Amino acid sequence: MEAEGIVALASELIAFDTTTRAQPDDPARDEAALQALLADRLRAAGAEVDVWEPSPGDVAGHPLAPAAGIGFGGRPQLAARFRGTDGGRSLLLDEKQILAKAAEYRARISASLK
Image 1 (spheres, one colour):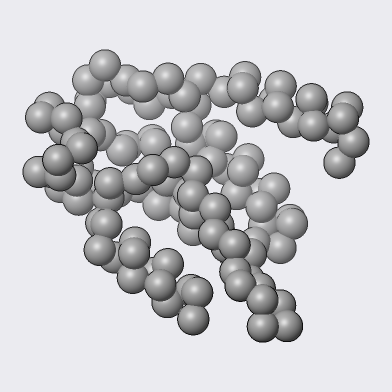
Image 2 (image 1 turned 60 degrees about the vertical axis):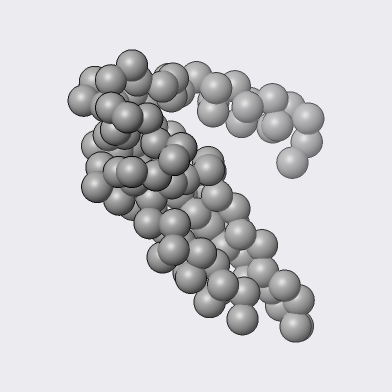
């Protein structure tokens, strides 16, 4: 991708409003639209993509979760993997640090690297 393409992509990505909501039940911003765009681009580049919305209970009680909770409605999470070839290692991309289902997430990562 040439410099002009990188600037165009960066401009497109930062145009999405993904600012943090003040309260868990505040309306979602542009997270779902951004994740859909990223998922499409990553799939087109050959990645395996997983997009999901954790439930509030998935993060309840986690030390990094705010006491008021976190609402993921309309705020999907995204992980993508480019499988290694010829014995090479895979590359896993996670669009943000997530709290949801940490044990399950770690298990999926471990399984994908085998």
